[in-house]
Image (cartoon, rainbow, N blue to C red; front, side, top):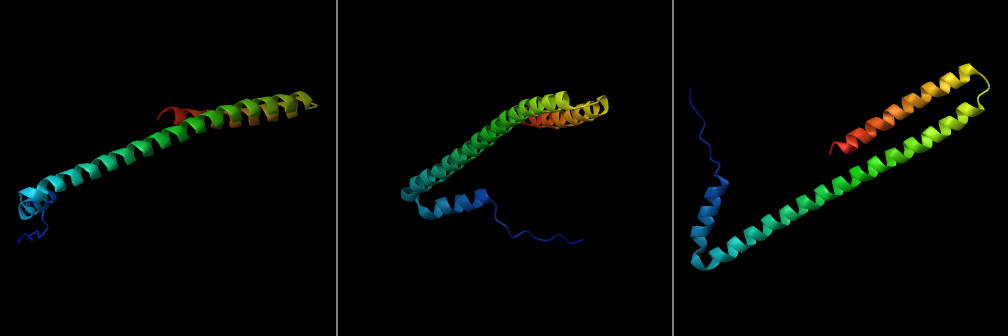
Length: 111
């Protein structure tokens, strides 16, 4: 079996060749540019994570508010129901809605 020859040059080899070709004077400039790119990428990653955390907190808060308002609405609807069958149906619907909202809160809290 014949193995294929990889013609790809590794990233480190490319940098090493670029440093050698530029000479001593431009190496410092190349190094500073590289560190500036790395720092910029790190800042972007941090900003993206902070935005994701903010959105998760907003989702958790919205789910808590929705649970509160849903519980209040279901309580008023149950109080206005005429018979036990209607009240039971509203209680079941309330349990379903509150369970889904709890799932949202739990997912947002895991982050």
